Length: 437
Image (cartoon, rainbow, N blue to C red; front, side):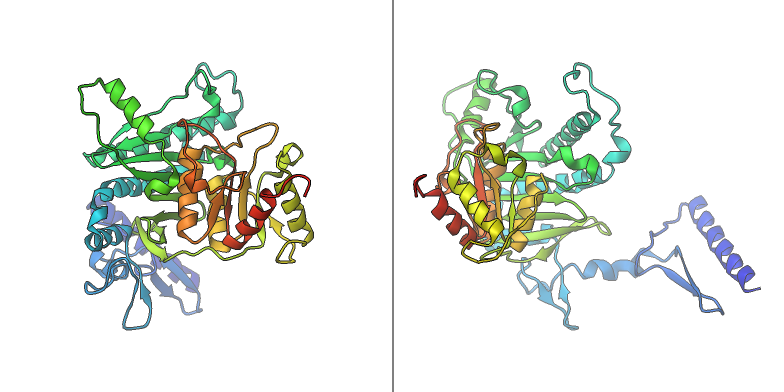
């Protein structure tokens, strides 16, 4: 008898749901505010869709906004003692009010935010919409489905980023091509964009780590923003203007006004810096907004994890790095602790973990890749700037500050090391040693 009662209640609810569709009435998705719990006499529970009005769920949205009298880029405590979250849009609006010199950056950041939301959905559905058994014509040199999926995801992510930048109405872009004389087409990152407006230049890598996507491993978007030099004074063609922009973007990371990355993993997190601290915003899929979850991110002074591709260890050229790593494994370093090895293979993923938990990320030169495998302008420079703003350090293979290294061309690669300050200082002492020492 009890079973029949439960069935009757379920069928009644489904009938109401059907009527809502026929009458074009709004139907809310289940969440913690509109799930209707039905208790039977036996004490069992079942959850059903409710057709409550949108006003009943307004409490959810209110929790993401701090009181008007508080600075919007800081979290505030409610009367119940719980911290309220704020959205990235409001964070940027208030930050610009308090720092008017950043007003010109707002459009670029809003475009990046818009693109990252769409790319997040694209990544989550890539296995459903990207057929890895198909191939583009002329791609016989890359016969495996993994390459095709990576190529498609790169193209789609680039298209999303282009559309988001165009939507601002003020930002234009240039797609840099590989220089055939010095760079092979497969050696540069596809889909990289150079965006610009009246005041700024930005380098954007819409999809880092796309080769890992089919395995469900995290991917990411990387961006960095510079001040734009004065435009050309004389009449020039569009090709000359583009070349002028590509030359002006070749600046060291220390000149950056802002930088950040978005990681697409179990959660989508957008980490950014405007040159004063690092903040992390997690995408809430319930309201499709980035909300502040990591305030004033600071990298630990020392970690216990190193991150590198040890498959290339036999080809590493730098003896100082090899000795340092050997001591970390044996627990003979300054901390006297054995370090663990963690390597995702997606730079955004490895840097995000290092930023939160400490340690060191490295991609040194090797016989297979004499300049490493990471592009300086649009990968290592923006992430080095973020790590530096979080209290960490970044350097090249000679122990020089990576923030001062100026790229000579768009797709130039460079060995890099970055991480916790005490770990980096220890590594630097090894890199500075002469081979005989």
